[in-house]
Length: 330
Image (cartoon, rainbow, N blue to C red; front, side, top):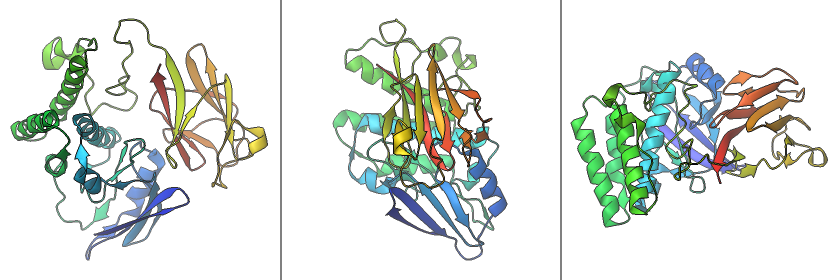
């Protein structure tokens, strides 16, 4: 398989040409495209032996790992890798179609997001195991400091002790190291609910089904001091890496500058006044304004002119323009 990438119109275009004897399963790829899964390149075109994808600008993960990596960045990369595997399994998609190669996985240096390729092939040779993919990340990383090497050494021991791969243990490892870093920095640390009651607790794990309430390592419901945290709603525009602060009760997005609060440039598929983000009583909603090419939340087309509630981590698509909704603690 041959993979090439280039930047065009603020996007990274990735082209894949299959090896001899391999063909693209276009039906399966089309089904994947309809799901709009976070953390993956979006398929644009597919032929029998080639496919093209688009996504946020980035460098290959292999190139990123050539530079010194802090323990926090390493944990983030490992955590995002496990989360991507969980999204595939939660959506009923086989892990064997995930391209598990750090040369074909990309890293956005602004947002620190890892973006993966999903490419279903017929006649494909045996793909690497998830544990082998994580090992390739581990042994390609250059630790920035001695304590970072310690984190990676501990992760190596974990990989060797889990056969087959136990992603729940990996999640607990990532959480535990993140809490240890907070403790070292002198910040109060919340008790880990997953420690109570052992493995049978209510921890959702990296393979959580879509819709589970847990949304990530750094999105705790309560602040470290034990008081309810205040959150700032933002939209991450996947194409450019911009973080758009929703600073009005009704915040409009579209391609006509004079009509909207955020101007979506370089995309003719977006309508002049496409959608509103609405804040009401600490809840957030998106409303499609009768746009030509519709609005989607996590791959589901929402009704026109009806408020549809959104939550942390939800993926919004205005036509084919992708955003991710986040609540940042302030």
